[in-house]
Image 1 (cartoon, rainbow, N blue to C red):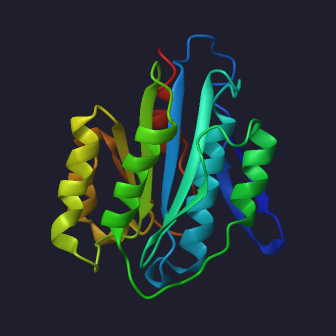
Image 2: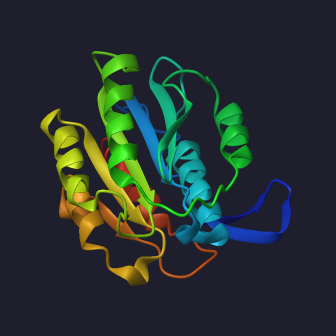
Length: 212
């Protein structure tokens, strides 16, 4: 089913978001996840809220035992910023609070390459050796800073068996670049319209971590 999620300090905007889908499962893989989130001006305020809500829905759909799941976060626009390291926060509540607090900076450039390379660096320096490694990349489409390097940066993650999901939060763009960033065609998703985070997107991502 779905639940209504009011965003902290944004009482004028409500998202219909997917409810937990995986919390009761015991066979989830030990995993390190990094959210890589486009924070540029083109994404817009509403899609920025959707990006944050998607991340929250995924976290709430997983059994967040600190020994089982570590979460990091990177935002990018003209450059990439590490918002927090893998394992820095230990509960769903704290992670949700930190996601809610992330501001929309609205910089005028979209440097997807920088976000992807920062994720690779974070995985190589702070992830655990015995985990599944997942990157969830949200954007509104094409890079406009060194776009010729974006797919190659994604391939560096693919080469290290890092599972890379992409979510086009303004899905009418039909971004070819984001399709190529994803590790597999089935790992690319599109959000259509404001205010709805589809349960099937959350389900597909959580099923990659929680075995059927």
